Image 1 (cartoon, rainbow, N blue to C red):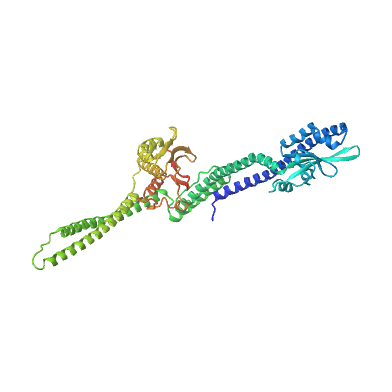
Image 2: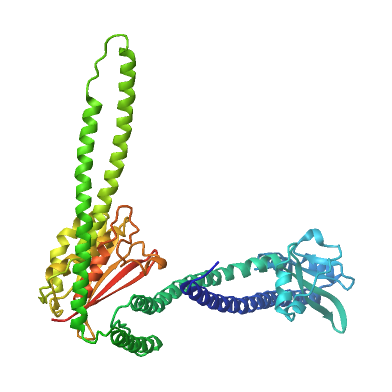
Length: 508
């Protein structure tokens, strides 16, 4: 599977942010696990100290058996029973020197040996993976916080505080949820930012690709309008220099150093092609006339009555029916021939329209006035496709040097095409602004389906169309009109995001 530059950039930025989030999350989890263990240890030691001080007072004041005095002391019993309400603490017990439970928060355990559990203090000093493996063990464990009890120099017993890893796991999970949400939000923001950066990065690439396409078609004086100050701006300056040199070389090779001489030859070629098209159109008209006459005669023959009589009447009727069937079949072939001739006639008509020499009436034309004139025609098409039309053409934009009717036709074609490229609704933005090079920029931005990359090089070709009922002449006429005005037209498109047609016209 092949990834384009945009997908690679999004994937790269997302991967970098993802790795950073994973690394920071790992550090956060390690510190949080260690913090939970330290807090559990601190709670166990605090409870152990409280039990120790109370037990010492009871033992010192006891007249008989010290263990019986501990078991019968209501204050110590209250402390032991309240221990089960602490976070992650499951119980507390006082053991004698033989390991038998003498007093416990769970009376059923008294008189029995206490199960040997791992020491919580030793787990605190373990590595993070070891700590997490104990906390997230499937079976769950109980860890002990131990404190010895001494009577003078003799061992009296020990205090054991039970701490549950299941309760520690719940506490850790509760603290991790905000961190997980922040990590997911960071990844989403990273994808959005990466997409925006990719869009900004790809715009100059689309401009350069459009310029190369026009240069490859043999246009003269192709220039790129890229902002200077970065690598793309330097590349655009270099492209403009190369384009200027190529144009000069082509003119020199063709002997057309004078642009007026080249224009005269182009006009002569247009007149020649127009004459050739007329020569093709005349036989087509004659063929249509004779086809119509032939169809009329065949229909009369098919509808003529047949006399039926005598012994051979039945045979004559059958022959007449067969003849009418043949005539009907022939009429179908005539219909097919007529349709094909009409289609060929439409092609010739389009070719005539495209090659007909134009008489330009150049004068100062304001772009905002052209927008006002085409909007009433564009609005019905926009309403049909639920398209919102926005216009941004201030009155102080300098007028362009052009033929108002021809520019109106070109702008109308671009606006209608943009509306048709948004069958599910969208926004069409028409704008005009002065740019460098003593020219005015006119933009047609839509949020439609976009143009596939493999079609970008062909959209201005005569008869090229992707519409079911398109003629392939509209954009060719737009291109020709802009060229006649000594202007440039560029297209930038991303599938699924929209298309921008950028027209550059000389100021008046």
